[in-house]
Length: 289
Image (cartoon, rainbow, N blue to C red; front, top):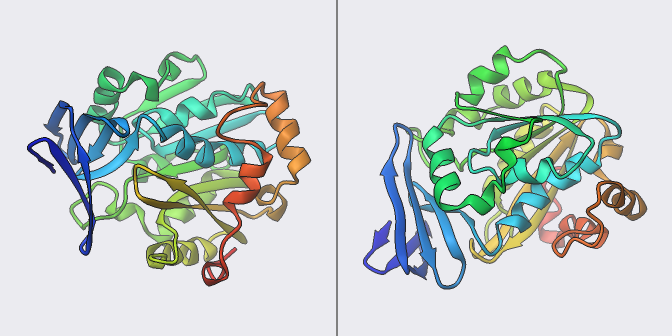
């Protein structure tokens, strides 16, 4: 919530993070969630859904690249991508940086998130919605996956909001059937990536539950993490496939893929960052991999 000139990120009952707010640029409630965009001195413009931070101007690209790039790099040849959630645009933006991506669909239930970010956080999209390969659909991912043709995409990125209660838009998507629907839509050896909440020695319980759920659907699941300063913790990511090799790329392959896409020398992602994402302390290695 916004309280005067401070936003309180109350994600932990015993720990609060306060962000000074220069200005509230947008605040509204859609049929699905509350949506706020505020300008902060520390992290620039921030997107906040139902009181929880989703993306911030100074570090959103770290999350978006960690979620999108490893999966695209894990595929050879033309790649079709489906993003469930992702209505704020930055994962689509990063997917489309690869010329090998021939089509990318965003399926997000809430058009107001798209409108708010395009109006007040245009850097999140960077014009990706105008790319001829892109399609943005505003409908329930659950129904979209059920209707989508089998084996129709090579990469599926689940960038849905955290399940913070039964009345939230994404609650019903955190289920075995959700991932079974994803697997049906993937081509053989296709890759599923999911944002998977905090993964740290302080809190890994939700991540472990989701990893176990995905391991019941896919043959191989790998946990990764990337530290997000605006969140205040390492964000967990889960990579799943029936092809183990697609989830564990040699540094030379990562660099060759970045070079081929014209992304070599990126300030936020290279082969070393890719490897570091999967270096977990012993206490966290019990999560399915």
